[in-house]
Length: 455
Image (cartoon, rainbow, N blue to C red; front, side):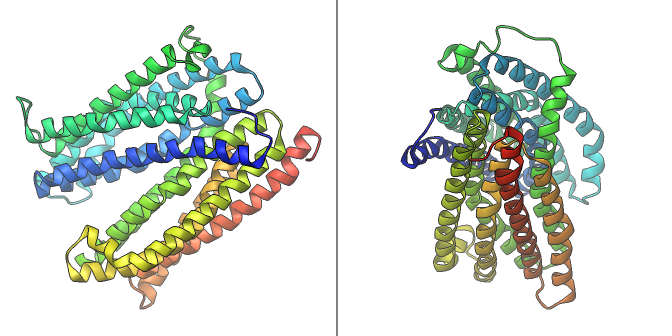
């Protein structure tokens, strides 16, 4: 990354870092999409099993991998402060922690998986596919967690284009092995939906090996000599990583798990309502890739500037990110409003489902506006290593305000399923306002006071 002096230079650097992150996130989103879509072509039971397995895995993975996102602000600040010699030590400790976390998840999963599936009252075939899919996926868990550390290092140097290239290379690998292992082509075993689990695990190994190769051999990563010395395990450094990472991980977990909770609570509604809700939520999740990517870019840029004690520049990047997210949100809101029925028709040909989906997409419009404020602020605060307030606001906005409010509206009024959307929007709005107040305090009071000056 470069030191910037003019706003035009900041905008250019912002987009250079943002666009590859956005493509990377869309690529990762597509990987799960191909797993479900290609399993669906095999059989209904298989797609149901893969969907159930994925719904269990995604909140757990996103929450735990969020812990490892602590690497990004730590390394960004070290680079900004020109303490490059400390970077390899932090990365190696992060790799050690990632391996331990992955092993613990595999052990805990082997104990709790069957009880969880048994409690869901699934058809025997669906139960078996979901179980075997997750077992297959676990074979790639260790490399996946290591890759998260390596990707955080790559991104923290501002080289997000490299992460994008690795992700784009992984997509054809995933699709190829899905084809070979789901359908049993070219002598490979025909495993159905379970094959997508093995295909994804293989893909995780591939992208991790590519990341290792890049970091060892390609400038500027090779200059850091990350794997030249394997330091002793430092529980003190782990504690530093966890102090920042655990609040980030729990914040993400609260955010992703709330939608699974709402889906479970909506199981009492008819099939048309459930299907319409899932379609609208899926499209809203797709649109969320933009504010999420802006958030990740801001963590890198703000961390770099804060490490160099350029607080004015850090504030300016935060404003650029929030302004950009709001503009994109307004554009997406306009698209949703004008084309909600064509969007619904992409997912279904059932007229009743299409009509109700179009109705739910109106609520998704308000989702975009709240996310456009909340997500960039979260990323900015992570750049300052200020993460505990974000964790508390995620708990408060989603689980203390959003879910109970939605439940009351859905069950004690005539709003029905729409009540859950109103509840979540209410929680998101409260969360966005709370985060905005925290950002103002951090930028105007906490950090100027900490560094003994104000810009």
